[in-house]
Image (cartoon, rainbow, N blue to C red; front, side, top):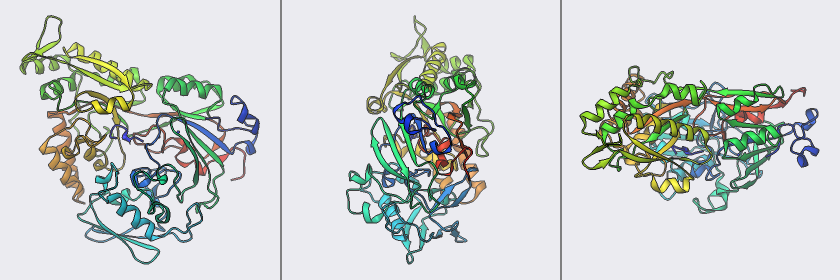
Length: 534
């Protein structure tokens, strides 16, 4: 989703310890003793994916563990070769990308990887019958073809500056996936890939388990068993980490703070593009009113949210682009101004009723705001937002629910959602704001419809000229000031608490991910036990 990842997208998401001995397997409170005991890791994450098939969106942003893309991001978010032997050769007109493939790579079942697998993956994703919610991310792709077994050539419809970043997308094996229903076949839950780990089990709602792939082209990982425990409730995740049942976990700032004095653990902080926002559905009589949207945009106290909810681990958000990004449009910051919010509503005919809640043409300024059950950060953002809105005369009723409860209501009801994707402004803004994607799952959850934004989004993704692209995304951000279909609240730094038992841990600039493909375990295949030979 843009809300899960939204995508998360959808998201976008995974039970014992980063230093478990054989005894610790039956005693989750036990700790490892020496390097030999540090060959398994269990980490707690907030959400799980809906599928494990790259054909349906899994691994599209890299770090999928089971799969590789043609390229990958290093620790500094620079592109490096993965299944490709080198970075692509790009034609002068920006319309042709040629990739030479790495030799000797096999899938975990022993079958060879080749150009046909790349062609199959991209063509299947673009097939109208394939239910991939991120299909529009490959809109620029006109064709992909194999030249022999070791070369793949992509032809684009138009110059698309970040196309190479799109080729971190995970590659599926044609010899398995082509023989099944792409949307419902067994490959969606029991995949085979070329990555550093092999799936050993997926208990939905509980855990995803992996073992090291001995055939991995990059060398067999030192962490032989890796488990992602799916624990949606933040408090439960912290409790299980403290008890020794987990070796690492993503935690909100107030819970991560509780481990500050634990000498056996380290806290890792990752800067992110991850934002929290409130959707303001166009089809709701209150949230669809531009005056209400503008008033909420200045009634909200973002700085206090950063200080009190995030305890400083983040920054105010005024749109999908963080304020420290070179793509951010200076001057689009919105100050907290309750008086201005009230004036906007007064001028638009929203007059306070006897109870202080505003009314216009018989419509009361009230609406529900849903947030995901067990997510403390979303809950606290929702409550603070409702409190700020109440001071302006808008009554917001906060409600918790699962996505199964929330999703059918998104056309009319507001949602405390999340999103964010580093790399390029197109990655986030197109899916979030393009009017044609309104109602397309977790894309454009607010059904935002602004012709000027649509035009600028198209302009931003159809040229390689950086100045023209900057101008396009400046237009988008300025239009969001005039008509904010969402109230952006904060950009959130991700905090991870992990047993201090390995070397090689680091973090990248992260998307809205909940720890599935990010966190210090983005490169778990490169971890080495402390004291072990490198």
